[in-house]
Image 1: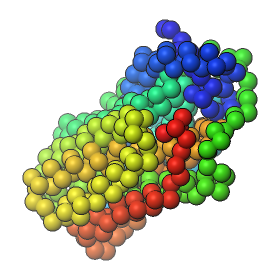
Image 2 (image 1 turned 180 degrees about the vertical axis):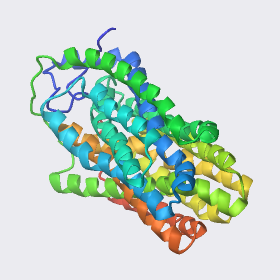
Image 3 (image 1 turned 90 degrees about the horizontal axis):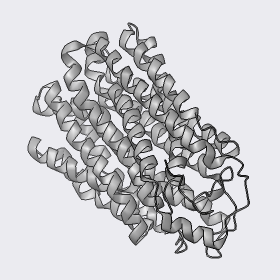
Image 4 (image 1 turned 90 degrees about the vertical axis):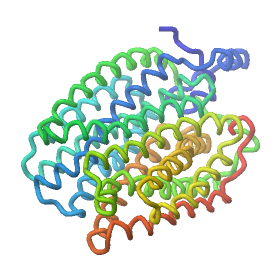
Length: 417
């Protein structure tokens, strides 16, 4: 496999930055992305998030088997997402100091054992432990794999992040389809999907073998910021705003991912398998939107994409609680396409604000996404128990209005759009 030439800007994190001449930097831009590596890391993301989405997709099976209420369902989501949320920034901070090329394959081993444990769990406590193991695997996977995507970007950071996100979003969308196939076989059939984790381990070990020589012998160097780069105060303000925007996006997506199946069953009387297919439609649109947003950010600027993505979904989210079954399916497609296009733009924007802490920033933002999803699912589940699923969706419809905070994002230098 050919090793891509990358510029100092592409390797903004301290552990990886080589000292390049201006000519070498120009050559890096011409070299372009390392597509094989991007494809491999995106496919691994697909496998990782497919396994994660299985947990939410088998909620109806677990709910029936163990007579769980919505609050307990939310706690399962919290168990595996909070593990990832808590550990991802720590993993990112550690790998900023010392990269671990084979940590991805090792982390995927936790997911492998978590799925096996979930397939044989017979108590609620064991289910929570199994879900936590899957979250632990995700905590190890995301920060370093996002770094590898940037390393292989050839300077097209938004594009590379979108390719990486596409794999994860499409993997998330596959969970309901796989769960619909396994409904007749029940909880033990989850063990079949441990083979997906094993395949991911093999691929990530190969990527680690490519990654290791990229960082061998390279020392950290200080990064000179562009003269027009925002000052420290504006950087911190912008990071808070980006977290708030991610909150509005991820909590809304979490409300659909965790409870849309129950909403469709309760309001329209559809079967569990049919509801899972409707959820797949939304998650597939979510995957497509995640891919589109990155290249648009590279071309037009990430701030504009963020504005459009968060606020643009508001009219459709407001209409969803009052739509019929067919209209709901159409609206979720539009919402998924628009609201998910912000993901790559938000993450790359944050990375460019603090390029010297690339791993930690990636971990914080991926971790916040997981944490918000987990906490939000638990709170919304409790609210649904005391009110109704329909009320939860009426309330969540206003979340994209938080996108107005994008007005506080600074203008970035042209070299970091």
